[in-house]
Image (cartoon, rainbow, N blue to C red; front, side):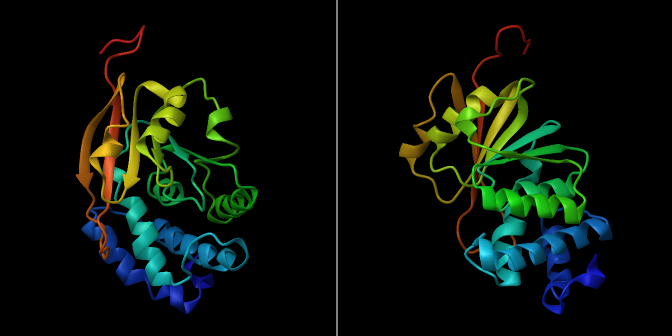
Length: 224
């Protein structure tokens, strides 16, 4: 993979390694190459598809890729749904780093889905499931262990969209900037905010937080 990458992307290798070390993530060289390959694809497709607000490789590494990977310790279970995944953030970086988990990426934007199909094909991500559609219309009988979002506007929206898709012991994860108390108050029973933690993203200046939301009590037919 690295042999086909432009010099501007290959030059990120040491910074990527440093960022992964700061996040306590150990990856094999092929997985590191896949992360760099994802950055390359983002930049090349961004010209026509407007996937991110920047095409600077270093900014993409810090603001998008390492930011996405900072939530890895909070994932639970084997089946993860990324609602409103857009350009595959955080779903694609997480799928690269967790090949043993299955990541479902949901978005209603057809252009972004075409980009993600290219990503899945080029990077050979067999654990990636692409879903073109709206969260309001999507159902998954088994339920997900983790439902996450980096793009949903509010915590209330995340709960509304995620509740029908969550497994009996699953959790919701919302990636946020600095949170207002009024937004936390949008989460109402039978759901509760389990924790709000500040994410330590290498190179990031802005405040980044992860909100973990659980079902208050075991659902019918399931033991605690």
